[in-house]
Image (cartoon, rainbow over all chains, first blue to last red; front, side, top):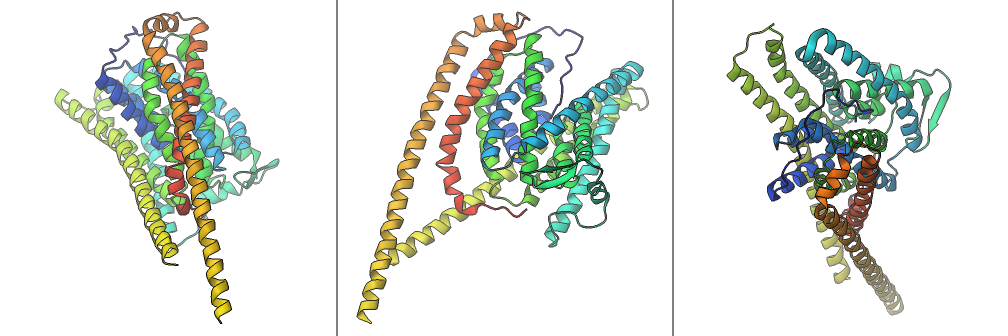
Length: 364
Length: 108
């Protein structure tokens, strides 16, 4: 989830793409995968949707603009659906949003500083390394937690880990979040919001940090973290949609095609959170984050080559790009496939139970 | 003994009727919900038609770089999200969600 939007100073020539049936269908499919991940995990749409649109020939800035504009409406409807299931803690969302904006601003200042000092390649390298470091840590942490739950441990981390120590940070004022059913220090909630905003501003995928941070540091149930993250996305989506529209970068046709897939995906994903266990949501999130981190690891030699630190032939650079994209798009497809598979399994189980019930009723 | 068997049979018959009534009521509600869902989706279809039919005019307005651009795009986006979202929600609620009702889990 991006907390705030910075419009690039360099003006890119706006090229409105020809909307062919193939382009339209591709956008619907991209929207569906992004929507499904957002509905199930609370985040995870943008990281795959923007590059996928760019690979269709849509200019980068217009892909970002269409994505963020469509995210605004998707987050409104997605969080409404999660709200029906009692998955949205609005109070927590508002508290986190204030700190999140500050985090984004700090990240933008830092990113600008790196860009000015090291140039485009240096900035890309900085972002990729940050991406790899943070996402690898989150992956390992969540993977360890999943293993513990599968071995029969409780859903809340009980060993004396760092997360538990941070969770016990009881500096007043303490604040009770009714929906999430947690009482925590206001400062801790603000810290989580700030960290989410900082990551959103630095690497553009704050939700990958926001959701695990809500789960492990604030002790929020997994499905409430997903719903609340989607609620937070309304604000960032509104801000982004406003700014990009003001600068004339929004192609409404792209946003409308994305909606056809993403609204369906976000609802199916939200229903999906009802038929799986919390650790299963964590499992999908971990798999997706790990593959995204891998896609960034693979691309690091290319940036080192651009900085002159490593020599890389042009064919090797192309191969590196390709492998990175395979991991990136593969992460989204893998996540979506797992979600759909579990839902199909639940559906089959429900049908067989109903058939059994009906046959018993008929026999009686 | 015969009386007991008769009363047990009656209560089972009653339960079966109740089961049928609930099933019928659910089906009726589901059908109404699905019709409403299609109604919202057709309204969304009208908005899509208007947007794509007037795409050139809209592009002119959206690239004007004034406050009308966000006003127009955000209004259309919210309207479409609402119509599509409500339509799909009603369809999913009365089909997929109902089918998965028995599989709900909340272990945290």
